[in-house]
Length: 495
Image 1 (tube, rainbow, N blue to C red):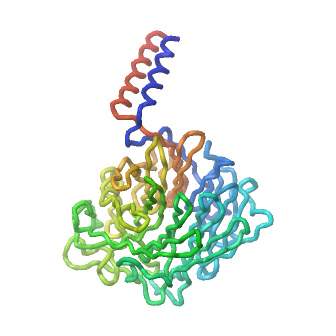
Image 2: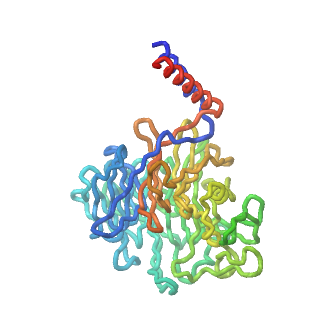
Image 3: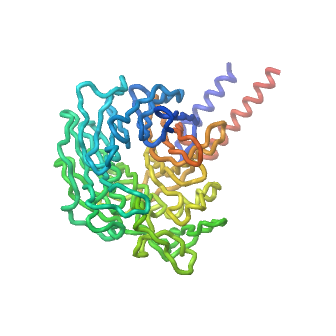
């Protein structure tokens, strides 16, 4: 009995100490998504957590896999093909909102369909809600009273064939959840752009703004919308449901110290400065509050047009000659980084070359992507663990699926923590191409779910990480050593 009490006392005292800015995995679980309807492979793209049912809803083009958080078991598959091409899912208050593009022509209005998470069927008495062209992402306001839908409005595409005009209008549908109807659908053509390098050089005359992703301020007062192809963010005032600002994000100089890239897709990896600038062109965005101020966290993926009409090789004789840049030769797409900005769009932190360098240090950098966006940061999720705020950045193009964790408690002094890698170790499957991320708390524990699209013959799937702060290195070592000694003593007594 005294020995048992000493173990408990030691563990309790050490674990009660303040956590350092490091992050560990208390355990790692995998939930593998299954084939979709029929023989069509299911793509694991966007994942959302439902607290009441303790489930993950994972969407792909043909439907939703519903997975049990505790066991990873597949509880059901929802075939949604009759509504169109499924792009996204978001859950709040027992309702799952699913966004569908028109299956025959994505330039036509899409649909949002509400599902009851208990029955996993369309909500009784609720009709599909017509929204803008190509709805691509959904976000509930914190109180659940409204649902915002990013309607990307991308033209139809045929590889290496120029887009045909006219271009569908990009917009954000604002749905009142009480009436279950669209109460506003702001567009952005009337706004006067603020700042330069909007990215219009990668468009063509007549092409519209293309909303990609939405972050809502924690106080619910405004929404920030990434216009990826336009290298800008739009701000929507949620008191008036109107777009009020259009902020250009500028460019990043790869010739500055700390911004090195590997420009050569060859057998060797080398990070160097090159006389090229990159447009930020963020995909995912999230918002958080520090000291009463709102900040946004963006994954600067970059995006050339689907018809490939806006990209060429940089040219010349330098190591950067094969880099893909815009047709005017001025900008690469994306900055191979994530960044933090204040609510006016001012840059307060950028990760520089950290993402590519950490991938290379882990032996996971895909050298074949060097000429075009590197590790390609795409998804973002935030978690507060042990009193500190962490950002998780999904890295789409690596030799194994990976997510980079950063401590962003101080938005002006973010620091790299570690990579979470789905490399096939521990008897689990190796997954690739993380797309959607969601972070949540359950029963006092914190989790990160990552939907992986899969590639190269590997099955797509969803990784579920349980995360915990790690005490100071010396303290953690003492805890392990102490328990090890106690274990040895116990074994001797049994002997």
